[in-house]
Amino acid sequence: MHCPSCGQENNDLATRCSHCGSILPEPQATHQDQDDTVAQPEPVLEDDPTTPQPQPAADPEGTEERTWTPEESPPAPKENPELREVAKVTENYISAKRNRFSQFFGNHQKAMGIGLALLVVAIVGGAWFILSTTNTPSYQQIEDDLSKLLTTYEYTGGTYGPDLEIPLSSVTVTKREATQVPQDLSEDSVSPTAYSVEAEATFDDDAIRAVRNVGVTYVLTEDGWSIAGEPTEQGVSYMAQAGVDEDKVLENMGMVLNEAAQPGDTSLADIYGEGDFSIENSDFNATPQDDTATDDVVIRCERQQDFSSYDGTITAHFAFESGKWSLRKAEASSGATTRSFDPLVGTWHGQLVDQSAKGANCYGARGEELVVTIDSVGDSALGKGQVKGTVSALAHFHKQLEKNQESTSGDELLEDFPFAGTISTNRDSATGSDLTVTCTTSGNARGEVSFVLVFGTDDDPSAAMAKVTSTHTYDEMVLGFIPSKTTAQFTDTYVLSKE
Image (tube, helix red, strand yellow):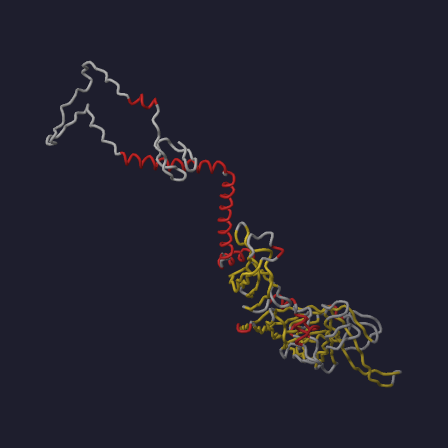
């Protein structure tokens, strides 16, 4: 049925137009409908035990209750025409709306799909934008990221400080602020916002603490907040937690010796240049308030030579400033430049190797050993001192000889004769020695004995020798009748070795 007002096709049983709501005219019955309404005679059924039998009429007064058997069905309720009409109108309305929606969706299916997709994109993009502009890299994440990057710090101690690889102990974030993503990082970032971060990384060792200030930039990528590039150095501060590197101090003793030398004194570098050094004491003091420290180091200096030695101390004062140890001043002990001759003390034995005389030689000393015992040596800052001891030697108390002899009358063995000697450190041009001891004995009525001990020569710095000179004065007749005093002198040279 078509609506006379708008032309909308409606269900034949509808009373109102589903489109405009206008009242529809009553439908006209067709001949077929009329034929269908003609009463038809009911068929006569034979008795059948399975066919339900007519039931007695209901009680007109309604006082008798009707009971239905399982084979029976209660009569259908009477239809309400008004409810039937409402149901039909509602059904027609819903059907019409469904048809119109289906028709509209069919005509605009592609456009609606695009629109729905755009809506989803807008919702997701808006949520991402809100997340990117409100979320930040956490302090914990920053500290964890930097702990992975800054595991150790390479510290170079310079001349007197240790060279260390200091492990990281902690990271503290000092600044975190939003900023624009740098142009060179924009391709990696999915947000226009970046974060500029500053942090303190502390590295701890028993000797040095280093606090490194670094800066990093965080950008938001598809994987989350991450550091872009390498951390930038913004400064390092140091605090000494122990004194100087003692090995480095000993390696650079030349600088310490020069600092300790006083004008006019013997050069400490010349004295101890090939000596031995050891640290006796170290007094470390730190001032955490200004990251400074001091270390006063006492250094034992020793130089042992074959026949003399040096022994003293130097106190070196070091200061820790600007992250490095430096030598401020050094002082030598009062006896550091004094040459000790203690190595001379002891017993020396000599074997004859040569003799010189005014006339012929007497080799009586070949069978006798020279024994020199030095009991004490007095030190002196001037390099001179007194030596005391005893000597046993063959003395030539006889006339000069006309020809060489193995021995002769007048050779006399002096045993344990006391002597006194004087040390000289002046260079001896004949031997090249800078250490000689000139000794004299009390002698006897027949003559005198003197000797010189020579320690070290140009040819052999470890060589030691003795030159023993015997002097004898005797009467002699000149021309057979003129009396005269004549002095005979014999010098025996010995090679010495110490017990």
